[in-house]
Image: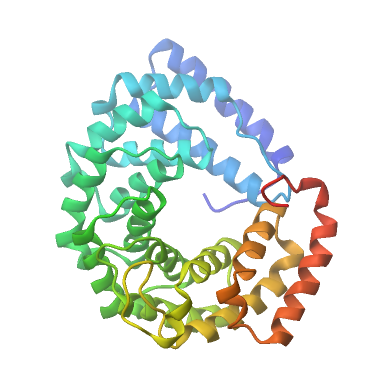
Length: 332
């Protein structure tokens, strides 16, 4: 649960889990609880192996995963809310978009939103969004259930919920107004992960997005980033910065896309550019490309001191040479 390891060291364990699970599934001895936990274990071990490697690690045992998904798709109501969340999280983490599975479990979840915890609801939507599965029935049910109760949600669940709607390019004014109210009223609850994720979401949505919330998250991100940002947090923050309007530095109360970043935008841009330069030696080719795109936006460059921009350019050039074999056309 808290361990790591390389793909090579974890492979025997994954093979043993898979063999036992297939035998139990074939004999009918693996119930919904078992199916969800086997998938969760495989995804967790895979995530640990992928996190310990600089190379792409393929999802293991696709045949077993398909069998687990087929079982679940045929019996979605056999899974309680936590089991359904764990199963969808596992498939999303493994990058496996199994249509019948997501169709069945999302429809089942939409009928019983009251059974889900805040974390379970947000993680269920995260899984769907991660796989690009847009189910309007589920989104509407989740928004209706979450919006009145959002003050009871932890900051990460608030951010994950907003990220899911933004990732699926789905506007929902009442939900986003509630999200923004939480961001403004309790910014200190947000850490680097939740602040960067929420800022990214607010930069991509319009309906219900408050400029005050954008400024609150930008300011909070500057506070928490002093202790460093992980690669994904840095990319969320850079992605948000790239989408902020050019006049955000003046703090105008404009329309959507985050409305305005107040006076936080220039300081945030300089800080993130420096952080990108520091992180460049360890960024993968894909992450390097995303950072390069964000920091090349004219509106962003205008906010970055020339000395910081030069440091980023030098780091980018050096790292691009190292990862050139992994640069696909879009990254180039």
